[in-house]
Structure formats: structure tokens, C-alpha cells
Image 1 (cartoon, one colour):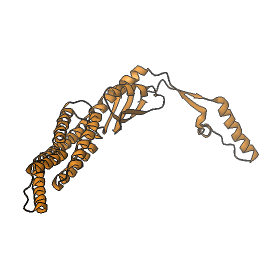
Image 2 (cartoon, one colour; image 1 turned 120 degrees about the horizontal axis):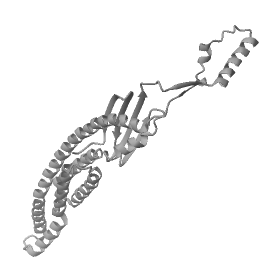
Image 3 (cartoon, rainbow, N blue to C red; image 1 turned 60 degrees about the vertical axis):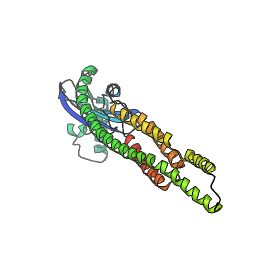
Length: 292
């Protein structure tokens, strides 16, 4: 199954007293590149997510967003920094005394200074947390890959349609090419006849010139290679493997053959067809830039 490199998937679950969400996004990239943002205190999940995804995604810039919230907080302990709290209280009383202010310091007043509190939780069981996150990641990844495959199927269909268009143009070039040689021979004969008048035309010399021309404009080798490239294109698209980088190379070879045909063309009809072929190849190239 051909996959696009653009994908999105999200999952939210409550598992074993934890609210977990995993969000995956990806865009085009030459290789696999990964970044992860996790809830503070859960950075150990970054490497686990990378290892988990790297075996399932061949290419693309993948961003993962993981949040974990413990719904059961009985194990959390809130501690007071008493020296700091005493400092705040002393400073407030000093202000009240110096500026003749009402001394209305209360617990709620001091509690506004959040840095006097610290929350301490019992160490998390990393494997238990990862097991919860992995379950959410499984669901998010399934949605993510489904989107990639749906988009990839559309891209494959478009590429094959353009390949069919190009091969029809190749058929037309192969049909037109011998006609250009015959037309050249007739033009050359008329031109020689005009120059020589009643003098007979040297047929052997004429045939030699025509043969040189025919060899110069022959495109059979290029069209055969072009057809071979499109056979490989179909095989790659049907392989079910990540083939984006191989396709990129193959399209370069297609473009090279089209350029060679264009450089040999002395016929306007063939030249126009080559322009159309190159336009279609460029559209194929644009599509495969997003294939995994």
C-alpha cells in the first residue's frame, strides 16, 4: 500500500487512573525525523515513542504530542518552604509598620506566593506509564496510517493516469518518427532537383544523406527505455513497500530520456509532444515528493 508522508491521528484514553492523549502529525521529509513533546516529568516517554514509531514509519517529519495526567493524586505531597514563607511574612509586616498600613496578613495572603509550595509525587512506574501511553499510541497510529494510506491511494491513481497519458504520447512519437524521415527525404529530393534541373539525382547519395538524418533523429532507444521506466513505476507502486526515494530517482531518469528525445526532434509535432510529456513527468515528480 502506497502511503503519503502527510498524516494525522489522535487518541484520548483513561487507563489505570491516568488520562492519556497521543497526537501524531507528519509532513514531507527526505528521511525519518522525529520530535516529541510530553507532559513535564514524563520526558522518558520521548525515546520510547521514537523507538515505537521508527519501526512503523519509513519517512516523514513526525511530531508527537503526549500528555499524561494522573487522576488519582493521593500519593502527592505538598510541602511548604517555611524559611521562604517566613521571609514573605516578615517583609509584609515591615511594609505595614513602615508605611502605617493595616496589618491584615492571612494565610490566603501568603498563599498567593506560589513559590513557597512544592508538590512531591511518588516516583512513577515508567513501564506502567508507557503501557498506558502505548495503548493510546496504537489507536492514534492506526488513524495516522489510515490517513496516509487513503491519501497514498489517491496519489497512486493520479500518477498512473499521468503515466498512461505519457505512454499514449510515446506511441504517437513512435508513429510520427518514421514519417519525419520520409518527409525529409522528399524535401531533400525536391531541393536537389531544383538545383540540378534536368540532371538526374544520385539516388545512392540521396539515400546516404537520408540514412544519416534518420540516425540523427532516431528516438527508438529512448522510447524503449521510457517504456521500461514506466513498467518499473507500476511495479514499485504495486510493491506495497516505501518506494518514495526510488521513485524520485526513476523520475529523474524519465526526464532525462524525454530531454534526449526533445534534443533530437526536428519535427514541430514531436517537439510539442515532448513538451507535454515533460509537463506530465513534472506533475508526477511533484506527487511522489509526498510518497513515503
